[in-house]
Length: 157
Image (tube, rainbow, N blue to C red; front, side):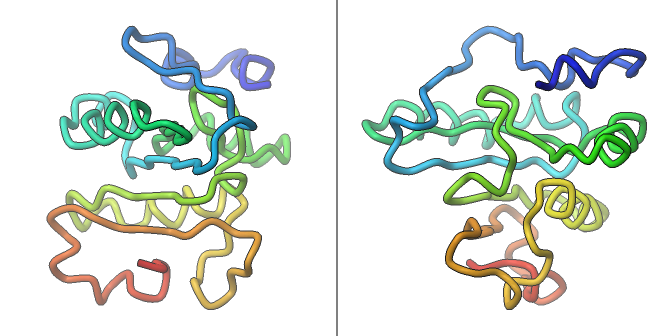
């Protein structure tokens, strides 16, 4: 799926999850599915220790699977839109809207627009009030969660 949309994209390795120490759990076999979203490009998010710890701890739990997604660079964002393809988790290649929970790491205010971009590309209604029972819960955590008001309308928790 993802590989078909990467021809001509700058740094396609950002989107294939080929690094070591990743998990490839079966999406259908999991009781709970988390998507850990970092609202910045892969190169920035990969170095975030908190996201890596959550990813490994969740994947070690029985019945739980965690995948990751990062904000795509402009060229890949445009490619996804032009193809009508959703933003997907790196390991599972499932659309963000297929997960039970989508958790964003709120590291700095300048990434807030990337959160909205990721929700939109992932097929998740932007406003929490517009989400229904079939949509994932959108969670925010991290240093900027101490001032939740700017994003309050977009998060469920």
